[in-house]
Length: 98
Image 1: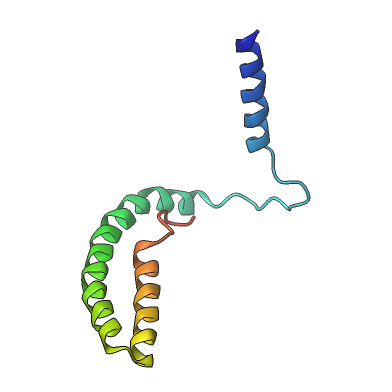
Image 2 (image 1 turned 60 degrees about the vertical axis):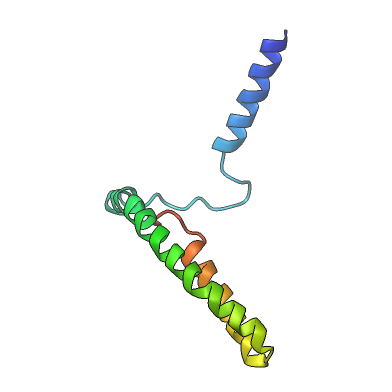
């Protein structure tokens, strides 16, 4: 009985993931060329994103520390700019969009 209940729950969960959201228009699928570019480009994006993120963090950390010591409005603006840069260089997207 337990296996049957588990199978029913998993089937319902998969059906919910497979159906489109109610009321939303379904977008047409991307072209095969865009899909291929996304598949091929994603490993390169990840391979390039890792060193760029590490370099950004290595440069931003001492600058943020110096800006904090300065305690000026420009230091706060610099910290905001550094955090935005880190978010852009280290954050999503991690996949090339088709």
